[in-house]
Amino acid sequence: MSSNADIYHEMIIDYSRNPVNYGEIENPDVTFHDSNPLCGDSIDIDMKIDDNKVSDIKFHGKGCAICMACSSVLTEITKGKSIDDVRNIEKNDVLSELGLEHLQAVRIKCALLSLKVLKSALYSYLGKHMKDSKDVDKLKEEAASLY
Amino acid sequence: MQSAQTSFENLRKDFPILARKVRDNKSLVYLDNASTTQKPNQVIDAITDYYQNHNANIHRAVYALAEEATEAFESTRDKVAKFINIKNREEIIFVRGTTEAINLVAYAWGRSNVKEGDIIVSTEYEHHSNIVPWQLLTQEKHAKIEYIGMDDNGELILDDLDKLLDTGKVKLVAFSLMSNVLGTITDVEKIIAKCKAKGVLTLVDGAQAVPHMKVDVEKLGCDFFAFSGHKMLGPTGIGVLWVRKQVLETMNPFHGGGDMIREVHKYETTWNDLPYKFEAGTPNIADVVGLGAAIDYLTKLGMDNVRQHEVELTQYAIDKLSQVKGLQIYGTKDITKRGGVISFNFADVHPHDVAQIIDEEGIAVRSGHHCAQVLMERLNVAATSRASFYIYNTKDEVDALVNSLNKVARIFKL
Image (cartoon, rainbow over all chains, first blue to last red; front, side, top):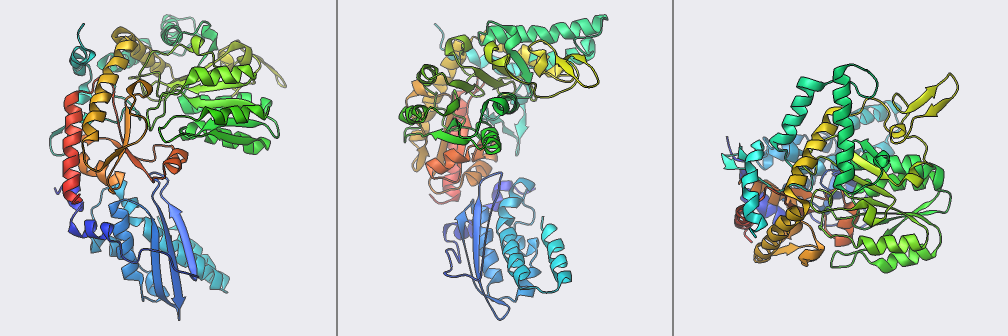
């Protein structure tokens, strides 16, 4: 069995030291904040959305190396993608980029906080632009099943 | 005289868990005692013995077992009274822990004594359990919660208290005897003297202090005092609330149910005597017995010796940790003003990452906000790492902690 400390490989340390897409966007189309009640980590995500695509995304906040690295990777995955594609991003899309598929339970929330914020941001954006109540219900269902 | 350090080394054998290996066959170095302590055989055996030989419900039945169970339960009340110097045993209420104790006060005292515009005072270094119950109460009553600030040395700014008391609106000042994050020992005499001069009640959270130093509640002169069993070698799920009789007699019950009544009729009920009025339902008998064994254990060691052991160990740890490049210790370095709790940050490495990497070496420290987010805001940090000591910790374990930080430095290229 690999040791838990093995998760601190080069990529994680580099991303946490030099986070990508870190900062704030002026006049974002959507912004969302959430925190992890257990450890106090907190993440904000701002997005610009043009032609149903995420044209720009930035994050900022406080978190451990795992949280910062995953946030960086997530923003890289998201940038330029269509809203539908972002909606379909899954946990493992982020975790596998960093070799964190087997992260212990206690740290998984560190890794996925930014994904939760991204999805929440997206749902709040979509919710505002949806007209059909069936779509809204489906969205609510999706949001409820986030974790 | 032998130093406390040497005479305490033998007691590690009383704690079976300290002999186990963790992770990759590493010796366990348990440094999260401010969170909960390990349990000696004496406590574990007392609980087992209770269930194997004496288990019955207390206070009512006349058969032999019930008599033994009642005796075991009630004798612990006397042990508590002696341990923290309380004159009247009927002022001692068994609760689940400090959190429940404070909630009991907020509910049973607060709801009938706090009115619109009143102020409850807490401090910037309180645990959430001494903030949130007061927020709930003041929101319900349209009252206010205010705070005694903390200076950069981790000590309370008593001028803040003076200003608040001058408003004439303060009903209660609630504060901990020792900070669970910084280890600061509160200047309790001064605070209580100021409050008494204005006729304001005081609640002291003794969760961090009672396990680690001699506490004399009568001498303190507060009105409410709370502590937990599990932070002082006892089991989880048992704690104590003490309330001065003059105040306790004015309080409504917390929970309604069995054991807390004198007579129940269809439309009215009269209450049982103190303290039983506040102990509804079958209590946590086994763990009260366990708490009694924990008090016996600590009494035998002597609380002054416990404090001396921790002073030596904490001073050693502060000296060693101060030599680690990039490591910042929060709070005062004056050992006479702090207990065995050291919160720190290591360069820009997040405390979670520190805790996880040193866990691989078998070292258990806490990382996070320690249920003190108001304090984290004051310190302007998201979290800290925290090492906290108890009677079984050794200087070798402090060395192991310091060495493990080298691994953190290596991985994070500090």
